[in-house]
Image 1: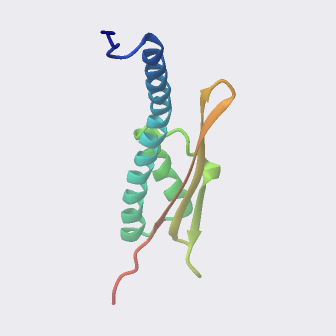
Image 2 (image 1 turned 60 degrees about the vertical axis):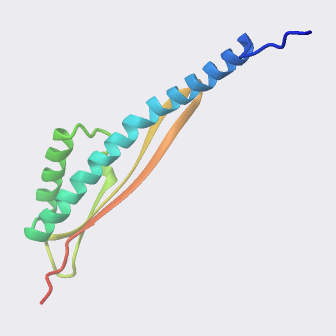
Image 3 (image 1 turned 30 degrees about the vertical axis):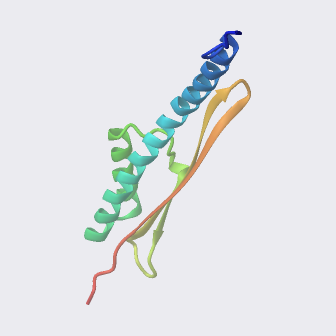
Length: 127
């Protein structure tokens, strides 16, 4: 009677560990990118309430965004990525648009790229 081998061989263990290492590296590179994105989402939700409740100029909005980004450790959003829009015949900001991209090195010459677009608009009061 021949004895059949049970379990995994050394080669199969190496393959499984290689796949696990690849996925772990992938997740470790993506996690900070999306953690920062959710910080930007929270800032934008707060700014939406802020521009709805208060009439803010472009400079005031830029200052508030800068302070909130510094507090939230958000470094990927640069001033060039922020667009502020005003309503017709209005000096106050009605809409904030943030469109930015994050590049994270992955393996060798391969990078992971995250492209994010967020908008916050002042809600109109119902009359």
